[in-house]
Length: 414
Image (cartoon, helix red, strand yellow):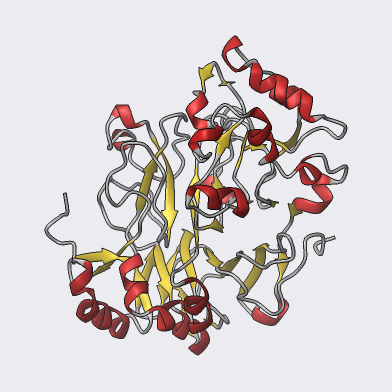
């Protein structure tokens, strides 16, 4: 069903043009909530406790909020707009995806729209009480076989959303150097015999607030229980390689969800989806761990802009993210070379003509004043940010491919 205040795609242009003019190139976005049936919500993303199962208990608890997303969530039984962000204006709403289809060059930039015909990235908070099963996201060549795209991703652990560790503040990543494909094969063969033991072949890394990781496609990982900001490529493909997590059975169907049907029992094919060299890398942390880097050229008195997600994956700049902190009583003009999705994580103020307020609690279906899409044109022109509160105004924003000429490399923080 489509709500009465949702503008159909064919009628988006007039209201979009008014929204762009009124917002000076900024678009207000509504919260986008996504449930996961195989996980246990961590209760830190501000959703009211009574609304954790707003999609129905059979769909699982809501443990994710997606930002500036034009990517559908690949959930069984999903509602028609699951994972897609809505723009709010004049008491009505319309899909950001439809807005980009109408005014792609102005919103995401002509080069990006010409190359991808969409906003090809998204970000989210994922927030769980315990760990996610050890899994990987398919590489582009494997995802293409099911009509999809691969999914590299990244993590940043915002202190503002991590007042507690929850149950397991560690993430298994990759495989122990020296692991063989035959060992992984035995784990898959033992799927229905209880815990298949794949974590015995991996290493766990303690998670630290204010740091992050870069995760290439094809690399196994079992994200731990810190609330995580996750810029990533615009895809929701994955394959679970762990049969039981925290006593909960993971069905085989979640291992082969994005595998061609004739390969669902082909263990060699399933294992070959892994990027073996990256999984058994003897210097995994050195090649994937991120610490914030101050962007001195875009910082000044009363405000600091930091790189929090950076680096390249297989030589390509696919996404990146920054954290802007504006001190009480201060303001700055933010100029970026590309569009971005913005989420406020602390404080109050304004961005251009739009108010900013970090909510303490959000009811399912309510709108907020913490999320904005900054268009390509507005980013290049410059947007004034002002802190009107008594505490630091802190925001996270993420960018699409090839946005920066000066993007740091992994390891530059050292």
